[in-house]
Length: 388
Image (tube, rainbow, N blue to C red; front, side, top):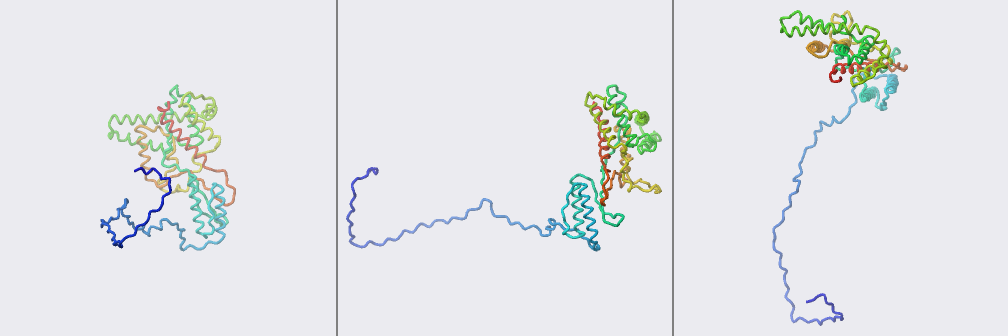
């Protein structure tokens, strides 16, 4: 049958037929009893039950003010003096400390000092803030600036420089290094290992006595090799010391650097070191390595153990023979064994008092540049074969 055809005429309603009897009621057929569906299992499974963190560890997330038990209450004048001195310190070091006067004295003082020390450490300035009293009894702050030399032996080798002076190819560049060493010896005051009063002279003499007094403890070949290194170090040391004593190297230092023409990397490095030394000499004509040496940790000369437990600056700064071979290995062992018995180390320290007076122009700029110059010079002399 085609349901797509439509009758165009109008359809009339069909006549309704009457039933002879009432139709019997029919019951609905009950639906079949099906199996009940179970709850599907979640993809992540049952949620894990974890206990809460221990309440005892909550104090680690809190900050507590310092406890000043048993201390008397300070007068208001001390608080005013403290903040006046603190403002001068912040201006000098260009830092900004949060205003915490509402906390109350002396808690606000402790918090302000802690914050100021933290800001100075972030600026990589080794500064320790101390409290003190001026002549009038007012509370003032002091800042100790320290140049941290660490555990470095600033030993400048002389034998490599002597060999450079003997080579015609490197003689002119070596003259710049010789003038730099003359500046360090005469002006900066770096001790020389052949001077009788120097610390390294005593170390070399002790090693010589150890070798020569007991020749049977050494193999024959090792004995002669060790004695040869000692004799070479002493001979070259005295030859180079006579050259350093000659004032012509310092007098011609500036002309040598101005007229020098660098033709290779080694010559460029020599010229760079000479320029650093000249500029340091111009900026600090009276600069000396012990100018700001901390003398508070030294004992009096009347003490029997005078400075034996302190690593003074003359012990880790100086000219040595060379930094390789049996002789230097023995020297470094003797020095390190002695330093391990010491409890203090002497370093350059500058103290500033913020009491309202104008701060002087003193700084540790000379020490910072001097130790950097010595470090560059030692590196160049210890890596001659790589640089040439």
